[in-house]
Length: 124
Image (cartoon, rainbow, N blue to C red; front, side, top):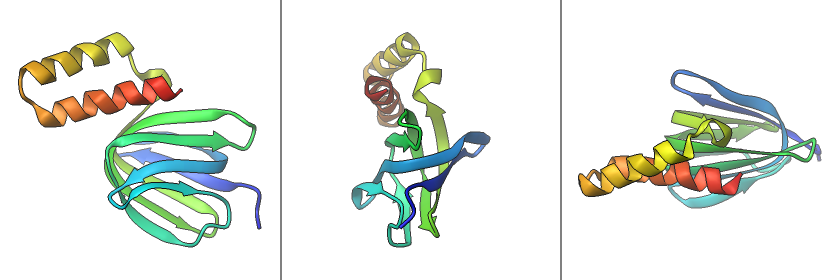
């Protein structure tokens, strides 16, 4: 069994992250899933939530992902997201303000997006 898998995290507008990893944890419509080298082939629908990537050099990459798909085969994991941003790119204060605006405006979708962004920042 290989010790690492190749990961591509792509949003509709850009490539967000690419590299080697030992574990990726993502939320799917079937629940949270961890993908390690040698995992069975899989295709899933991504839910909004943080994606955590344990890199092969011992680091951690966290991204806020909003919808999309994931596909794993031959030790290659593709995460094709509608929207994705690395936790390091997220302005926490801006996300907190967006969450408050969404709550006061009864905008459930915006509230979910802001909440996911804040959870991604908390994980990093």
